[in-house]
Image (cartoon, rainbow, N blue to C red; front, side):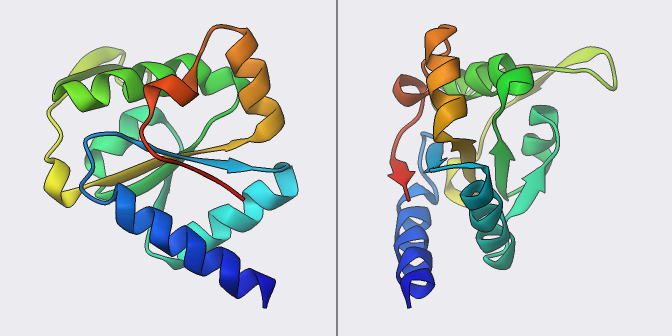
Length: 136
């Protein structure tokens, strides 16, 4: 029963982030819960982006933030509400620009609480760079 409540709360959160000019942030208690939330997002039609540069190619997507991808995720989240996002595609080795069509997009970042704390101490203040946040 607790899983159903968590999923319905997650669905309500995702309804708020749909079409938002700010990215949403989902904070998991630990790595195990992070993977459980990722499976829930997959089941709700979200695609897991392996690189931040993939997000512009998707409509409903999530990106798992860890220490190695912290700067890319932070930069994307800061630029997203401005209407113009410039990201460096490491596969193509070039910058690409992206103008979000907010009405059709739903992007969220997924992070474990410990990783979020580590990122905050490194100067990547994700909490101030995103819009609504959901903590399970």
